[in-house]
Image (tube, rainbow, N blue to C red; front, side, top):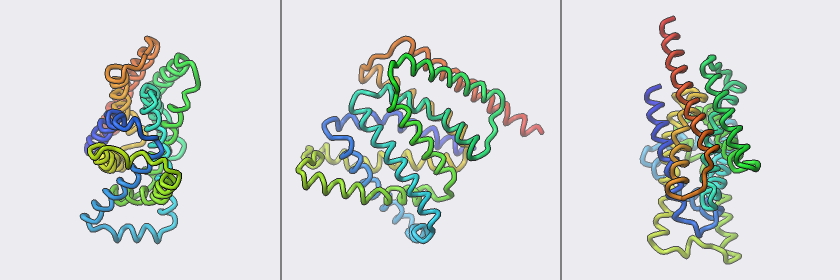
Length: 292
């Protein structure tokens, strides 16, 4: 559990500061950035798996239809999440991305109850209710249907569920996921070249090297997340996730200068309160379980 918590904290801090990285590529369309992100993630993970000498595991996955289908599902889900996130950050919607990842823990609890039969205690349900009320306040104040937030929460929540149900080494699993969407990414490269709309290849050498590093930037937090998902309950993992959107919120206010209303700040304060309630309740629940 402690090991899982450390991995989760590292992953969410990395994801929290990611908008700073993607803002560097404001002039590159989101779809093109995604294609590079997939390709260079595959290259980085391929090197890592080769160093670990685990290509035999890849062959076993290819021969196992159920595992292949599960990893294909998680690969497509995370690719959709990446695309929406990149587009939102580069189009001035960092606050809404933050809201999406605040929504995600609530969805995680629902998925955990429905699919994994986890049973939150009364204190944890109270925390969920407070967070739910906060999200409702934020959505009303936002003034329109927050499709970016909903899409990010749904895609990443389902991705977390898929990772929880797939027993696989983190490195091999991530390489398999990127391999699933690699043909789509390469096909998009070919399409852009044919229509003459490729932007990334016209970047300066320093910027293009930065784009090459998107493989490392993408893979590292996902590796930490996969290790955390294997060691923690899905609902608890979801609440630790508040680290990421909190960092994003601060970036949107103090770095990207997006407007944030007082009502929005009240909503976020309620969410932080729910996190504290959930943490206290979880610690007490663990102590009672050990005592019994």
